[in-house]
Image (cartoon, rainbow, N blue to C red; front, side):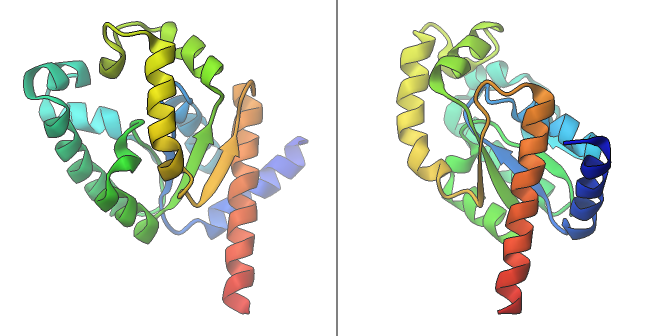
Length: 196
């Protein structure tokens, strides 16, 4: 996509986005990294739900898991995401398990546009293995086996996202362009549906 087309696409998206764009997917899918780039290109605020949870708890996510357990983390996550969704147009990156919560999913469907960043298992394994110790759900287990188990559990729920962007082996620039094109296609289809 040349610079002029990219600029036109950015302008179109900026004019049409009236609610948060919520990025979801497995750990290692690139939600935070791509979300920051997408927000920058669309001149929108970026929020990472995991960072917001850490700030609210004054602990890292591994510390929250260790001290309070996953259930307490998920409860705090649900509250933080509900608050962030009220902030209007923005790019919001969720943690890998956040979309599994039925209440959170309902809030996202009501107030945002959900985008599933779908990345192949082997690529996810490569990515998460670059930063061992960062992911509490992978502590002390075989990363590929655990990710495979989580993916099997989450896939049917992730499929409920408004948009699915398959990004395997895409560099960051191409991945962001692909997400923007998916958003444009979704918004145009919504406009067409509203007209009919």
